[in-house]
Image 1 (tube, one colour):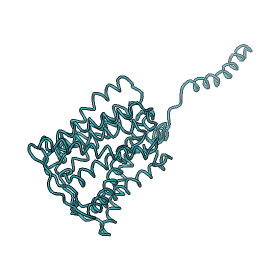
Image 2 (cartoon, rainbow, N blue to C red):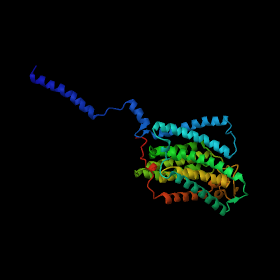
Image 3 (spheres, rainbow, N blue to C red):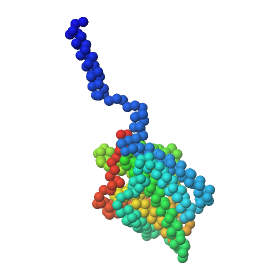
Image 4 (tube, helix red, strand yellow):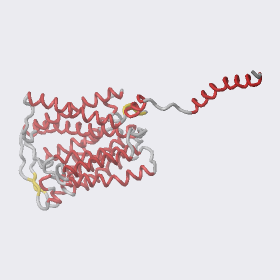
Length: 384
C-alpha cells in the first residue's frame, strides 16, 4: 500500500472519534423519560405550585371527612344543627384540623415549615390585634350607616348578665377558628404556594374553570358576584403580564384566591350576588394586607372580629343565618339592595363602600412600610 494512503487513513481513524466527541458535546442529549416526568412535577423550587395546591385541597377534604366522621360518632356535631356557638365551633374545628394536617403533609414534601406559608413576618401580635380592631370598627360602621339610612332597625337586647360574657366568649372562639381556617387556607397556604408558581395564563385558566363550573352546574346563589370579580381582575393582571412587572405572581395569585373565595360562598344559603362579590372583594383586601404587613395575622384578626361583630354583637343575619345566643337584635328594613335583605349587612351594596374604606385604611397605615418579605417571593413560572 502506498505510504501516503496508509498515513491518510491513519489520520482519519484518529480524527473520527475526536469529531464525534465534538459533535456530541455541541448537541445536548435528549432528556430521558424519567427526566421529562420529573420536569412535570418538580420545578426550580421543588414540587410545582399546581401539584402542591392540588395535594393540599385533596388532603384537606379527605381529613375533613375523617375528622367529621369522628365528631359525628362522638356526637360533637349533628347533621342538622342550628346555628349555635357550639355547632359553629366544632364544625370549624373539623376544618381547622384538616387544614393543619394537609398543610403539614405538603410542608414535609416541600421541606418547609407550616409558618412559612405567610405566617412569619414582623410584629405579628400587633398586626393580629389591630386587625381585630379594624374588623369590629368596619362592621360597626356598616351597621351605623344602615341604621342611619333606615335600612336596619334595632330590637331589644337579647342577653343579660353572665350570658353576655358566656356567649361572647363562645362565639369569639368559634369565629377565631373561622378566621384561622379561611385565612389559613386562602391567604396563607394557597396565596403563598401560588405566588411562587403561577403566571397570567395559569391564573386565567384557573379563574376560567371556576366560572365554567358555575355556568355548567349553576351552583348556589350569587353567581354574578363571582363573574364580576373574575372580570374585574382580568385587566390589571393582563397589564402586569404584558409589562412583565416584577412580583406580578403575587397579584395573579390574589386574583385566583379571591375569586375562589367568592366561589366557596355560593354554597351558603341566603346569599345574593352582592354578598358573593363582597366576599371575594374582602378576600382581595386580605391579600393586600399580607403584601403590606408581611403575614396573614392582620387578616385573621379582621376576619374573626368582623364575623363576631355581625353575628354575635349586633345579632344580624350572616349569609341568611341568625345565630342563637346573640347580644343585640337587628333586622333589615326597606329595599334589599340597601339593607341586604335576608343575606344580612354583607348583602347590602353599602358593604362595598366599607370594604373600599378598609382597603384605604390599610394602604394609609402600612403602604409606606418596607415591602413585606412574604410578598417579595419571586414568581416561578408554572411551565418553567
